[in-house]
Amino acid sequence: MSAQPTQTESRLTRSLLIGGALAFLGLFLLLPLIAVFSEALRHGVGTYLAAVQNPDAVAAIRLTLLVAAISVPLNVVFGVAASWAIAKFSFPGRHLLITFIDLPLSVSPVVSGLVFVLLFGAHGLFGPWLAAHDLKVIFAVPGIVLATVFITFPFVARELVPLMMEQGKDDEEAAVSLGASGWQTFWHVTLPNIRWGLLYGVLLCNARAMGEFGAVSVVSGHIRGETNTMPLHVEILYNEYDFVGAFAVASLLALLALVTLVTKTYLEWRFNLHRGGVGH
Amino acid sequence: MPPTTIRKTTWRPPSVLPGFGLTFGFTLTWLTLVVLLPLATLFLKSAGMGWSEFIAVAFSDRALAAYRLSFGTAAMAGLVNAVFGLLVAWVLVRYPFPGRRVVSALVDLPFALPTAVAGIALTALYAPNGWIGQYLEPLGIKVAFTSVGITIALVFIGLPFVVRSVEPVLADLGREVEEAAATLGARRWQVFARVIFPAIAPALLTGCSLAFARGVGEYGSVIFISGNMPGRTEIAPLLIVTQLEQYSYAGATAIATVMMVVSFSILLGLNTWQTRRHKRLGG
Image 1: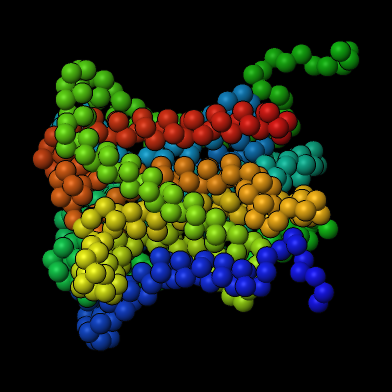
Image 2: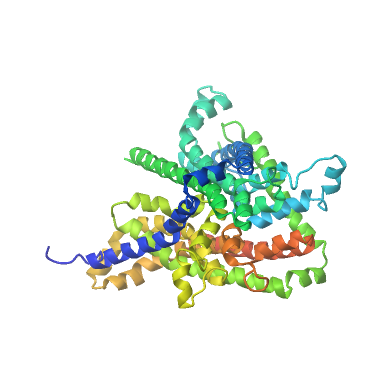
């Protein structure tokens, strides 16, 4: 090697920068993740399994699954409909519509919960009406679902709109001009094109739906075994100094996060491969 | 004008694809019901309070302390993330090293890990008897239950916003300009300061603003590590929850409105600035 190439850094600088970045990530991201599992297993596997199988924990897991099972499909239907309207047609106010769809991302989770209390709580706008008809939204499952749908509202649409815009509408126009109906076009042309992007959106949406804390905390009422989702159950156990229990339930959520990250990375890897193939 | 042009009779260009009415109608209805009306309720409720009452509860001493803490720690965390987020993005884009894909996946952890889990994990690390806290305690450094702890939680939450904003811009940056600068005799740090940094600065600012906006409203990861002392370590979202638990709907609403107005202003300002920049650059 003769001259040091000027457009890149020296070996030493490089190693220092990589080392610095890794040290930062290790301290701020990896260590907390390790702490969750380590604290959960602190008193052995037996205690861990007992904590996870506690009836209140099981009820919380069940509720979390139920809430995700309702709110994720709702957001899939919305996301697909919204991206079809936004990506396949041009109309005035398109950008405003996208901004509105992204709105829940910039609202504090606590405020997201608060608006539903203001609407459906005992002193809320529809409170008296709900009470008269013996319906419960706040401090009950419907409120938790509503808050979760609000929080995860943009997740699927955000993935699909740019993807469908990039793909354009030539394929669909060809299908329609060959006599396919709207549904046939969607099922046989659009859906196969967007399926990985859709899965990606569903994945992120699901992770947030199962892990949401602030918004759900405001509307749930924290009734053990009834309106406690997994993240809320973690908080209750933690505040009762049942650290192993809290970290045991938390470790399940951390596992979910890891599965989400691995699948996401895999999909990105496949996407890039696919996109590269189209590009060349 | 060519004679074959069809005069527009609708508010949007015609298309052969079906389903616009259905999907657009559904989108607008669902958006209005789930997002817009609930958010409007907040402002409606605020407007119904009367100006003097609103000011009294929204800007009480306790509320002011909470805003200062929330905005201050979010800004501090934004600065930390500006430095380290840029470093991480730089390393991920420029240097191929073994395990890069794993590290890149790890950056998204704060997006995927529920905030409450992050909160108790960070507290386990930084509490006075915690993994890291036990070594800081003898040195007189208190992290958990102080604003430092809150800042650490917000650094955790905000990091991916900065990295993911800067990464694509850094990757698309043409190396030719850097090579030209080097050929003209610029030193490496001069190339970085004069050529690279100005090109990625807008993306860095966007990432930091997103992290800041998220940090201001963050609740789950902060409440465990913050200690929640009114006036000292009580963040604004927690104050909203406290007001709600005391059935002070007016107080909760007023504070929430102030926070929403500030976050929206930041994001709107950012949006306007970016649109202008795009227009000026002809993109």
